[in-house]
Image 1: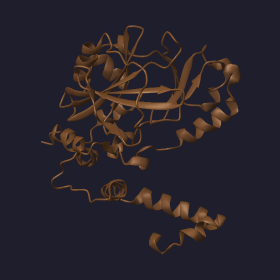
Image 2 (image 1 turned 60 degrees about the horizontal axis):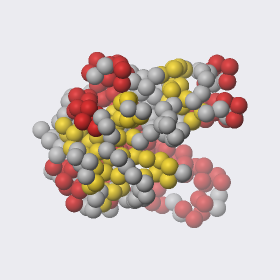
Image 3 (image 1 turned 180 degrees about the horizontal axis):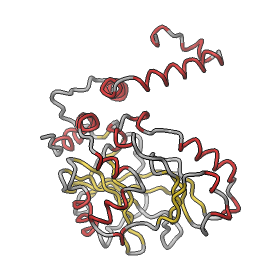
Image 4 (image 1 turned 90 degrees about the vertical axis):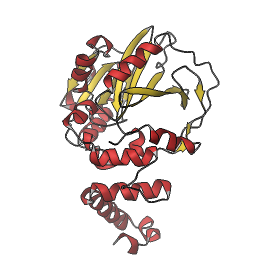
Amino acid sequence: MGKFINKDKINNSTFLSFAYRVYTKFWHTFMSDKKYMENAFKKYFNKDLDWKNPQTFQEKLQWLKLNDRTELHTQCADKVAVRNYVSDKIGSKYLIPQLQVLEDVNDLTPEKLPEPPFIIKCNHNCGGHTFVHDKSKINWSKERVKFNNILKQNYYYQSREWQYKNIPPRVIVEKLLLDENGNIPFDYKFYCFNGKAEAIHVSIKRDGVHYVIFFDLNWNVIPLKYREYSNEAKFDIPKPAKLKEMETLANTLSSDFPFARVDFYHNLNEIYFGEITFHPGSGLQYYMPERYNSDLGKLIDLN
């Protein structure tokens, strides 16, 4: 049906626009996971997805999305339940203090919330968070509407990453980590293959700019970039004092999976667990130069 719709007419008609959104949502919801992934892969990379002999990093992540599904994946994707996994594996001292876990957005009121700074987010999705430094400067009515809408979403249908499908949605209020200058600390993301870290992606957000820089385990810059984030940092990125400890912790937390990205914050000489991600960018990130797609793909053993 979609190929017979004139999109110019859709853009000029409120009714047709609404009908097209309903049709698209219906089609995407009931399309098989395999077909959905094939269409998305074709859209992003302009080539067919090779299920029988996947070679690149993106292809193998799609294969894992479809074929590697366990209850442990769901637990580790849940920002509340993963804390038990982390505690069992490496100890609770690495957890960021989780101040509240809410089921009712009506509890998002200044008098019911802790003292800032804190971050409000959900346990079942990516994005949509709110930083709170001063409760009096937040429009809490808008926040309740925002998080009520997020709680109704099932992130699985946006990406077909199965681990999100059965997470009971909650709102989390978590302590906001800040460095000595009041900035969000650097986010160190370890790419782990069969329980062994091979590369580190440092994520830095400064003045509205998102920087992504890759390092090897000896803290040498790797000339690898996301097409979406090609900004080069103009400031020093020192080797963290506890780099080796973070590497060891990442190896432990990823040991149950053929691939996992394990994230940490290194702040005020302390290490804090961030999250475990199984398919960065849903396996649809475009890496440059192209050869890294093959190099990273070789590290995933689907056997």
